[in-house]
Each structure stands twice: as C-alpha cells, then as structure tokens.
Length: 243
Image (cartoon, rainbow, N blue to C red; front, top):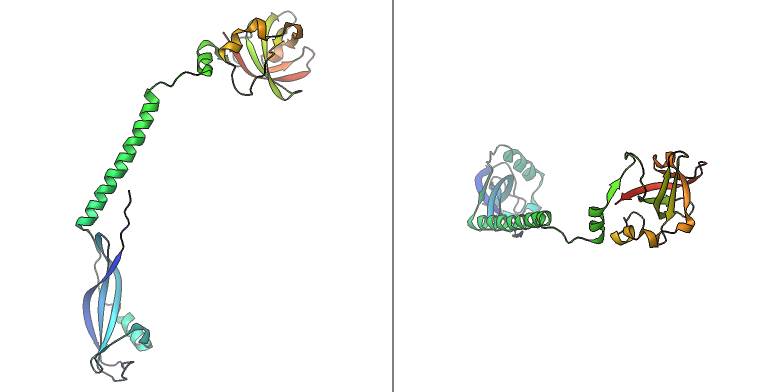
C-alpha cells in the first residue's frame, strides 16, 4: 500500500535587500527596487526545507512586483550574488497525516511479508501429496557410476544415439568372465529425463522383450556407456534404478 500525495511548494521568507543601484525594468526609475529572498519548502504530509532559494523584486516607484520574465541581466546578477551570502538550514518533519501514511504502509508491507513467510513455512512443513514418481523414488534406489557394479534385475535408462531417444533395459545376466551384460529392452515409450513409475518398474516379465535381448560391454557400463562387446557405441547411461 503506497499512497502518493501531491507535493506542495511553499516559499518561506528569509530577508529583503535594497537594490539602490538598479533600474526598474517596468518604470525605468533607479533606487526604488528591493529584492526579497525565500527558502523553498516541500510539503506532502511531511515538510522538508530545502537549500533552494527563490527571489522576488518590488519597485516602490511604480508599486509593482517585477515578474521574473522581465528581470534584466543586472537583476539576475544581483540575485545570484546576494543568494550566495544567505545561509539556510535544511530540515525534515513528518506531520500527522504523514505519520498515518507511514504506519499504514508499515502495516501493509508487514502483512505481505508475514503472508509470504507463512506460505513458505506451509510448503516446507505440510507434506505434499505423493505422486507416482514420488512413490517410485521411495521404492527404488538411484545408482551412479560409483556403485560397485550392475546387478541382475537393474533397470537401466539409456540414451540411444541411433534413435536419439531414451530406452529402458532390464539386466537379465552378467558374465564377469567375458565382461558382458545381457539386457532386455522395454517395450513401452519412455519420456526423456522422467523416471518410470512403479508399475513400469515392476512389470519386468511382461514389459521387457526377451526376444530382443542384447549384449553389452561390462567395462564400458561401469563408465556409464552402453556399448557392444566390440566397442561399438550404442548410447550413454542416464540413470540406473534398483529395486
């Protein structure tokens, strides 16, 4: 809540200086001019006395105020010279209305901050409803290249270079003598970068095609590469899931 008030400009009288050597631009008489100086004050529920100084000229011969647009170079020079000799003090003061507006803004922004803090704490404390992916993560362990090695039954998520897509494999056998891994491909479509849900991970017998079993290099597997035993590149391992 921010309330913008109109800013008023007040002129606080400082002093009047006679200008006997200047000629009035209106009546052309000399020695009858006087210049008054004022301090600029800004007001909008608060008051601020600035360092700005304004001036006005009055002629006692023709009894008129000389508009600033009629000032000649002599009057301009006199104003600048005399203004430099005047010392003004600045100040800032909040009025009743200004104090009310300040407190209203404090209360408003304080309420907003408390509301946002409450939302943050709520989402941190209150448990979210579990999704299929959450349930899967609780039942499976995500492995990395630092694991001791593959195990029969592991589900491997592979990015295949030939199809530019993610393919799931279930490891069916591991032969440490020949340094090879046998794996069956998953028959359903897998969304890239999304772990399979629990149902997909547990339907190993029906959702993995044993007729398309492939053999891969055990050594390259440990380096997160899915290659044939003769080193032909098949793809990279994105993730490994173990029941």
